[in-house]
Length: 349
Ligand code: TXA
Ligand code: MG
Image 1 (cartoon, helix red, strand yellow):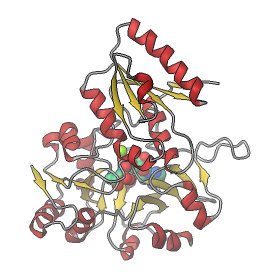
Image 2: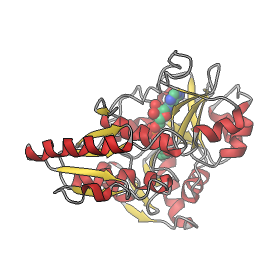
Image 3: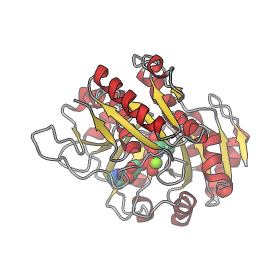
Image 4: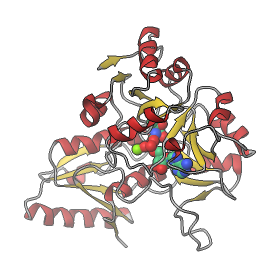
């Protein structure tokens, strides 16, 4: 069932109904500021198992626990590292997930057997009201089928999960549009496992140097293992995505060349274009999804997944995209594009 909810001042009766489903061990899809989540009572292992079943998610991929009050951190985590205080004050509620030592009482079903737990406080009135009314921390991955693009509208959730979810709360499109930053505080130094809405620069302004998992440009050594859920080709549309990186003039030429080849091979082609690049592709028989200006990366992030899904709906075989860069929010956008591209990142020199 789909229920509309006011995203600014959620109706009490709607929240109460959703909280009841959670307390019974059922599943509710709900909006956060990043993407829609698929919620279950994090302290009920059977309820958490239903999340994995609905998403067809492998049991080795751990789930983020969502809290609404800082005190509740101690229900799920222990031995809090000193950085938690300043990070939670600065960035919670908000798109920052912290990896912390797991509280003994928390079921390892949520953490996929790990000794650590992922926790965040979402910045969305509906999410916060739901967690408070359910009176329990809520385990919630993105509300999509495993390995598919995360949902930024209730319709996306419906398209992916349909009646596998008892209740979908429709609070309109999500604001940020890509998933939270995952920051590992369980090791020797803070490490970003997944870039997101809180940028590396924002974290560094508070913590000093922050490592980036998989980054080889920092003294040669690879920093730690990537997050267990962050395998190649994760945030994928159905179409094949080709991501071009390099200097603008060379990349656009390479994209046009590839486009000619694809069109001669009678492929249906979609382009994820910034409004700056759009004119380059307008003369071609391609489907253009305009993400907006490169000068406004937060708008690009907001639209990215909906644009990928829209191209899938149009049945394109191949999606072409030009990279956005590696600072600020652009790092998160680039990360999602390169995951969607799998190994098909084309570097033009
Ligand atoms: O913005 C978000 O974070 C959204 C909304 C719904 O809150 N949630 C989300 O959840 O993106 P999910 O399950 O799609 O992604 C969670 C990521 C996965 O890559 C998972 O591997 C990682 O967090 N993760 C969870 N627990 C972890 C842990 N203990 N150690 C390392 N990584 C962990
Ligand atoms: Mg996900």
